[in-house]
Structure formats: structure tokens, C-alpha cells
Image (cartoon, rainbow over all chains, first blue to last red; front, top):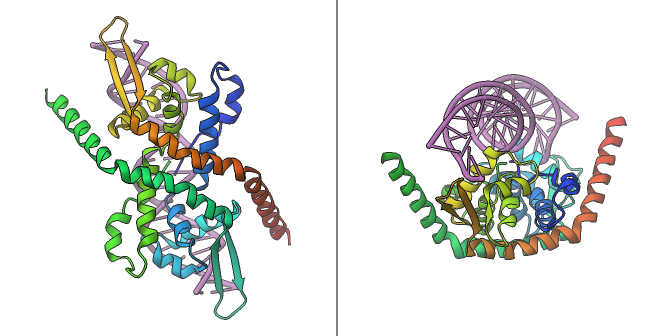
Length: 141
Length: 141
DNA sequence: CAGAATCCCCCATGATACTG
DNA sequence: CAGTATCATGGGGGATTCTG
């Protein structure tokens, strides 16, 4: 996925200084969203929110993910400090992933978004339906 | 960008029923994130949070956006019911966009994420630096 | 078991030109 | 002013194969 415009930071200087607030806010929110962007990050993070999980367990509990994307997403999350990776030198190998405290705080911050989505789920669906109907009607006219 | 796996909804049935909670939570959060996904949605939404704004004003206040992407993103946000579009039959044409109350509630829900990003900005940067250094060191060894 | 390497495809975005 | 239409591209993600 591709979420957010990182150039905002530099563009801020040349932007209209009358009201730079929206650009600055946008920039900060995007910092957060960029950590959880990508098709699989959220699903992985949530599965790690209740204790350590092994690689293959994750592969099963995140439906549809490929081994490649699981690896890539785990690496990115580890790089950002959202998960920790522990290797046990056993045969066969055993690798455990667990969310960090920073990730725990992230879940908490996402609660608000979750609540918002639930509150407006129906309204959004209705809005889409009516918009699509209007478009279809306009196409016929 | 590409955020979220919409297939989770259907996959839920065949998923492991011992603990469907993470998958269900992920699904709900993704509903919200999918409304604000894309490179420009947040920047536009934030600029509409303090009253109506015209098309060309938006083009100026969202640095780097192309006319095409501005149009596309506005259409999507309108479809989801996050913004309203008002056309004034004047010469030259005048079109105003404004955020809906649903969008206002969305900003509020994003505050938590913004706070999280600010709190952990430095920690994340340090995590990335140390991760990258370790990778570079491993590459040399 | 837990990956790494390789190839390919699609879609979101960008650039450019035209219009009611 | 506020869009549409068309073409080009890049990188996120999928499928497959190989390995310590």
C-alpha cells in the first residue's frame, strides 16, 4: 500500500504560512498511519497483542497472507520497534514474535477508530449506495 | 496506497474459530482505515475541517497533489459521506467542499493516533537507526 | 520450521492535454 | 474555475522455487 505523502515535511516551508496547521497535523497522523500501512500489518499486530506467536502460527491465523509478505511485514514492524523477534537455537528452529509496549499503546489509540467505524458503518454503506445510484441514473440520462 | 485486506470478512468463516477476535478487530479497524487510505485523503480532510473550501484552494493548500488525484480523492470521500460538494451555478463556476459531521468525529478519533505518533516519534527513529546499523554490520561480517 | 530469491502483474499515482 | 481523458510508470503484493 501507499499511504501518505512524506514530502509534506519539506513542502511545509514553501507552503502557505497563513495556516500551516492542517499540513502539520496531516504529517503527524501520517507518521502513525505509515507504521500500520500495508495490507497485513494490522492483522499481524493484533495477533501479537496477546502474547508471543510463532511464525507458522501467524501464517495460519492471518488468513490469506503469503509467506513472503508475512516475512516482509514482520521485518518492517521489527524495524519500527513495534514487535520483537526471538530466535531459539533448537532443531527444528523456533522463532517467536511479540508486540512491544509501543504496540500496546497503538492498539489503545486505534480503539477510537474502531468505535468510529462501528458507529458509522451503516451510514457509510447507505451513502455509497445512494451515490452509486445517482451516478448510474446520471449515466442513463 | 493499498491498505487492508477486505477478504477478511469472507475468510472469517473458514478461519480458526478458537480465537476470531483479532481477525474481527482487524476487520473493523480496516473499515476506518480504508476510508482514509490513499496518499491524499488525510491532507484533504484536514483542510476541510474548518469550513468550506473551493477546489482551487484545495489544490494550493495540499502541496504536491495533482488535479487528477484531487478530483479522484474528493469523489471517493464524497461517496463515503465524509464530505459534501456544493455547486454554485455562477460564471465562472464555483464548487465548495466541506467535511460532514462524520468527518468531524473521524478527526476526533484520529487525535489518539496523532498523540501516539508524537509520543513515540523519537523511539521509532532510534529503533530504525539501530536496526539498520545491525543489518549493515551483518552484511559486512 | 522459518525463511530468502526470483519473476510477474496490477493498480494507484503522475504527467500531460483538452473542455463546459 | 473545475473539472475529464488518455497514456505511462513504479512498487506493493502474489506465486513459485530453493535452503540452513
